[in-house]
Image 1 (cartoon, rainbow, N blue to C red):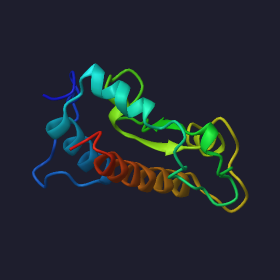
Image 2 (cartoon, rainbow, N blue to C red; image 1 turned 90 degrees about the vertical axis):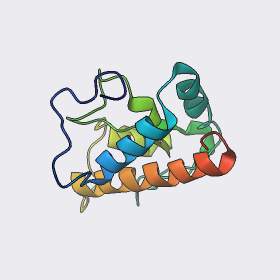
Image 3 (tube, rainbow, N blue to C red; image 1 turned 120 degrees about the horizontal axis):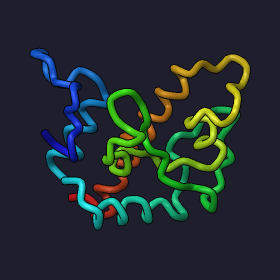
Length: 135
């Protein structure tokens, strides 16, 4: 069990980690741990960064509004206690759509939003490694 009870019924199957979400979760929790100090560093690192989600027609491209937009879902997110390590730098507009606080623009699906968010998580992860926050 890693990250404070994460495997609460979400077991890894015989085929291993088969989704982007599970892969990021494994890397982040198993390699980097989930301590409060690291959580704080990752959250604070979002200040002044560029949005990594960049939803077309949604993104406001304003670094002053960027925060860490956590991955939320059935397997992790609300109430699981590890969400801070899995997030993307997102402007206020992208974050609102990722968190379903605003309506989808015409022609965009929730799958598009989720995919852009996951790409943003991977880009944010690379930026955290490059900056030395994660090593």
